[in-house]
Length: 391
Image (cartoon, rainbow, N blue to C red):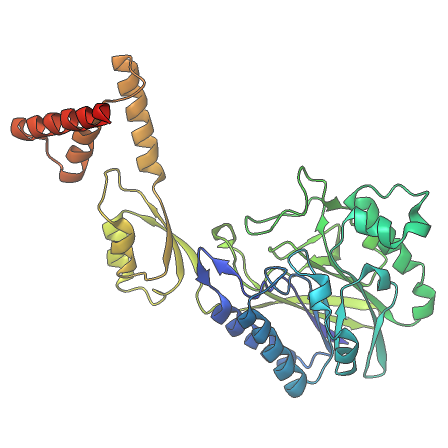
């Protein structure tokens, strides 16, 4: 049997106030194409379907349209769990009725022991879901069972649920056991765009309780990777959601289980707008951009110019309209060193208003103030101070 493992769609996400909805729909269309191309038997989505607990209306409509189209054209089951960005209660609306159409929403840890059984080509898969949860929820839901157990950490809570599922494996003899879980496996690599589950690393969980599953479809971390064992895998997010991910290859994982063997393959998702970092002097980047076939990518520009410039963002956007961020590390370092040197030389912690304006003028205009201009500045400063004293 074959299935596609995907996760962290974050439908409705904004990146630096830019809506990524069109990019997400463009990527989801490729997910559907892969499902058809590889004749898969199920689509597994391991949480963070939406980007926030109360998603905007256009995000809800986008998911609704995708599910309707997918079920009508591909006609295979979809199994989803909720992530830390989702509201499990809202995501589970109509879950019982949707399951009749082949859309299975696993959003309650209370039902984690109940598998979704999928049958195709004479084989069966038992799909279990551990949606995002915290230790408090586990203690409350299973109060009668954990009264004497130490369920105080994320690891203890996640281990308790995994062991609870495995205790019922005997009811799934002859089936491959698949787990969907939205969690942070200890030691895995994170990105800037992931919302922390807790502070201080308390959100980490162990991979060891997951080894007995035939495949573990993880969600939460945005970089494709495995941890502990190769069958315990993060497929990564649907798109790049921060510039820290600019080198990651986004996509989905195609999994095939045959006669007890598990094979997996990463399938690339081609973005509508890639997320890139470009570096160099401003004018060189502008010149290069005029012949760049991917001018509409989302751009972070690292400028190596050492002098001040007027409106570098506007000038870059003339060739890269989706320039979202500029960094000027070299300039900032030089300015910091210069200020420190001047402060040490003069014994002052601050420069006066005239010196600040003179430095700014010389760097922008590449020339020094004339005596007449200095006199005008001094008189203006005196007038401003006098007006402040009168108030």
